[in-house]
Image (cartoon, rainbow, N blue to C red; front, side, top):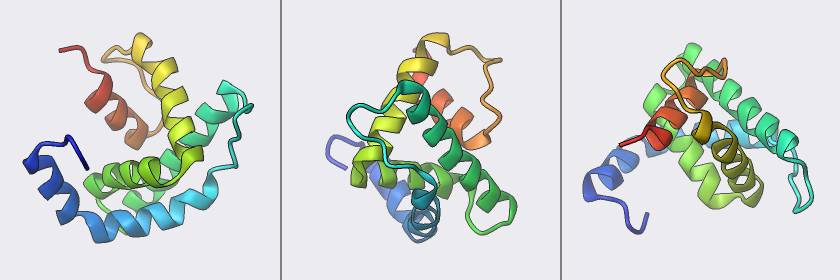
Length: 118
């Protein structure tokens, strides 16, 4: 969590247990994304993980905040997830508008948190 503000680190730690449960549950939904996997497959993998996290939120197994921290944990611990997030952001960030939706609340929240123009 190097480079993160202290408040953000504290927030991640507050949601760690639920986020770790979410990450362990969602990570198997992500296909293996090798160096030569297509951008389409990477984006689809990211959205699959996000939709699974949405389901966990709907079933009250994790909170919305824990779903976001789950994405962070998966991104820093799994290279395939990192590739999927990077592909999603490369595709979605330039197209970001308030009305852009991915049909996944977790993905939309992630996008709005990291791609919103300042």
